[in-house]
Length: 71
Image 1 (tube, rainbow, N blue to C red):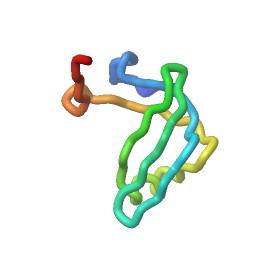
Image 2 (cartoon, rainbow, N blue to C red):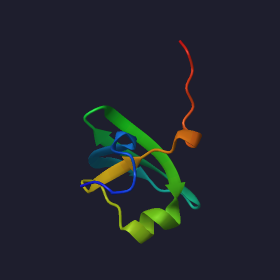
Image 3 (tube, rainbow, N blue to C red):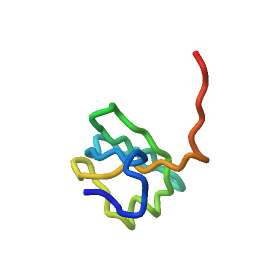
Image 4 (cartoon, helix red, strand yellow):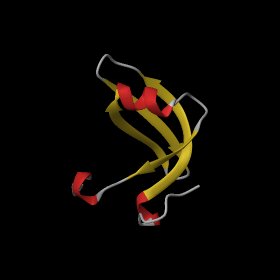
């Protein structure tokens, strides 16, 4: 599974391992071959997508929303 029109380097396929639902936002964790990706999304988006633990999912990244720090 991938979404065409988006650079494949910005996509990580995995499965949902955790969803922490809040009133307005929720935290979704996706286990990928590169490790666990955690994202904060609106609870409405979680509901609209019908996300649940065990679902296959894609973690998609936009370069303008990624922070990098030198260690």
